[in-house]
Image 1: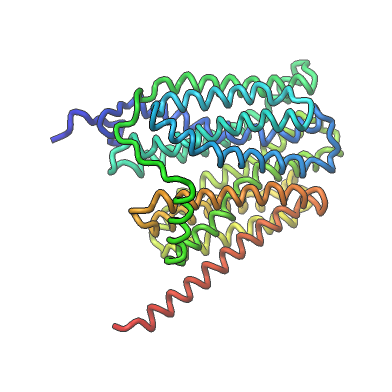
Image 2: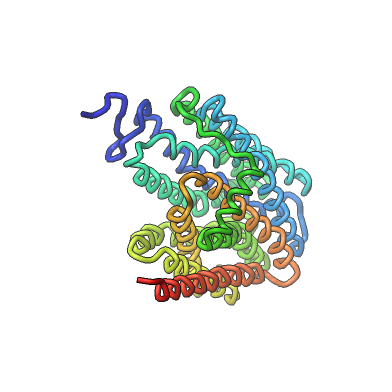
Length: 435
């Protein structure tokens, strides 16, 4: 007999006390979140050029440093947001996170120095930490266990659709405002104010989430204990250690696309007749190609992955990522039509690497310390973002735009070789194991 406390949203069976409108509000957050997490990164080169008049030779270092400090802020605050949500409820935290993001967005385009950019980037980072914490927490709260996969799949699909919309559509906003008579400076500010309004709208929509504290808040693992349990698990299970290494490379993959492709495109068109607003729109198109390929390929790769050994899946995923980054590194102009095949392979490789890493750890993480294992995986991923942001920014300026892509191609290739070696060891163990 169906529990009267449980409802459904289409094929998704909901946990007791969760109503369809709560889920719809969450899905709106899933739709706008990834775009809000990355839009300011896509337009940072525009601000460096128009607002600050910063020499092009310094763009890579400054952009990388901004991303580095944002990741530090996220690491420090994401656990605090999560703990707060256990005490005052998911709804209050989600509303607050979007409002903090809106504040940061509203001020970011008015920065006149690198220090001001960093200050408002930190504000945005605090908001992102809260929204990211709730994005993953609510997906565990709202569905019934039998429908968790369905809701997760829909949320991930909306993540991708929203990201493509932000990159392909909203990066054109400065160009649209300039065409209506605004200066480049005002056009950029108006664009950020539009996105500020989207963040405010999201905060209002979050008022429709389930109110009150969660029925059973999981205990928050202290950071030192999380690290100890996660490291112990890796020492005992080579597959988990591989997952940590793959997270370092895969999260770096995500950062390099929004950060350095945008910078590269902006610089590639700097010597042409394109204005800063047109350059921002072009960068959005290029990143949109990559994200669109990842979005369309991920369900296909997921279907294939269910029929293969998980390490073999990781080998294939990171091999495609290494090929994609290596191919992009050798192209001369990322805006040329000839670059599209490389960009498509890059998107396919990026999506495959992230999915392969997640699938393997989902299979291998022991149930009693799953939170610690996934927590350390996230920590390793954050280290990957910080490494490519700081190091890649300096490589971008000192060596050239392709240098960060070479570095990430090498990182993905090393993970692939690590996985090949582990697969070979496991096969030998199977052959020599007594019958």
